[in-house]
Image 1: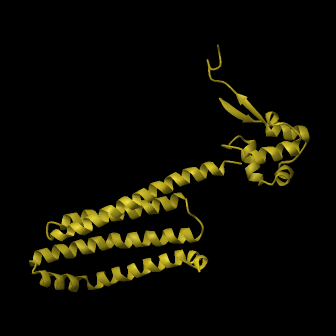
Image 2: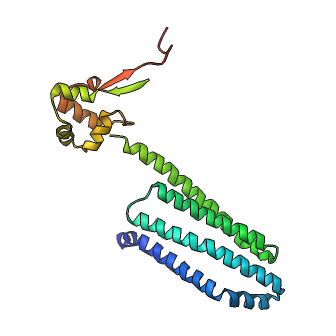
Length: 150
Length: 75
């Protein structure tokens, strides 16, 4: 059972990426209605709702780049290409996307204060991915050196 | 300062081809080439042992320490 789970681990991760892609697509399609409903619920002024909508769609752009990078990373891992320059670049891109989303949400704090929560979440995520990227960088250096050990 | 690999000299003395030696010691010709050209960062004891066995020599015949740093070791 554990071996089966191990062998399907990348497949499950890919499934997770697809689920998030579906959620993001739903958010993109229904963004206008969701923000309008949310604005009515919280009694937000119209310009604030517009600010939230702009932040949502700007974050969505980076969300798609992030999901596409993660998909490519998982595809490389599935092919057995783990510690490579390409994967390090992909992780860098994921980290930058998280940082960009945090920055956009930080701008959004002006129109809606609870945006501070996604700022902290995305910022922390960017930091975690950056550390993973550093680990990959070191591992690549070690692998290159090990390749020259005969 | 460097460690020079004199594998090509020893191979010429024993009149053995790279492909044959690589096969006998169980490494790829590409890795043997890395070793011969001095690009290797390290050599495993098992590889060195196999090389010495096949070439009928001592590790000192294959590896040479070149001390070109001025002043070091002078007393």
